[in-house]
Length: 374
Image (cartoon, rainbow, N blue to C red; front, side):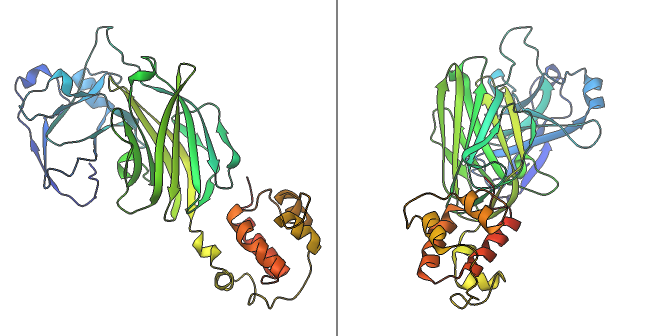
């Protein structure tokens, strides 16, 4: 269990439920009493772990697993208190986890239901995605395209600077119709060995009928939004994020469920890294700290490329020279120079405040950091 602030304690004990024998629970009902009754107003993640033998002993089917949540505290598990959870196979052999986001804590139980062929048990389906913004991994104006989304998706990391917008657009199919989507959320700041939803402390969420909201106690985001449009009978979900602070390489997990609580996840492994642009924009002082060269304005005077070429590339002369063409002339791999660096430093090169050697040394540094690929 994870609370939003990460430091709230709770008391767990056996819960009291009327007609308990009707529910064929995997274990005794668990009553959760938090120290702060408002702690889950913005959502708490609850998860329960068991193994395949537990299921077999109770005759419970994997696909029919549900969480009962006595939300109103009347000691009765009612039909409207059934949560369709996210089901995850864990790394440990035969271990299974069921999890859900709840807005209150009381008594929980794990069991299964059978609809007898009636009702919708099909979760939303993620089909494709694109990521634009940042550099590396195929980011940039044209975006990184993922044609066939799976539960786990491996891709090259996109690096984005603080203050720069990154956009994740995905296509989702909901078999009960586009109006049946009830919730979708994006979780990030997930790194290290364990990278599960409940370990994220930075996420944004859409709930039908409510404004888009964020859980961000550490202030990673400076701006965020989720927009949803219908396109050809499917849903186009657009997440936009601007980061205020840097973030280590992180997975992105998208979770969605429909009005019947059918839930699905898709994970973009090691999708994004956020670097603090001010660490590099603080030129001239920061150049010295990075060990790129000597004091600005006191370089060797070495010429790497004709000054007129630099002026055309920087937009101070007519004509057009792309980032890729300039990098090729300089003998540096890559096809895209970060726009924020170009905007700041190009003028200084023309004015003589930055030598060509210092400029080229910085580009070599960016290449080694993976910043020069679109």
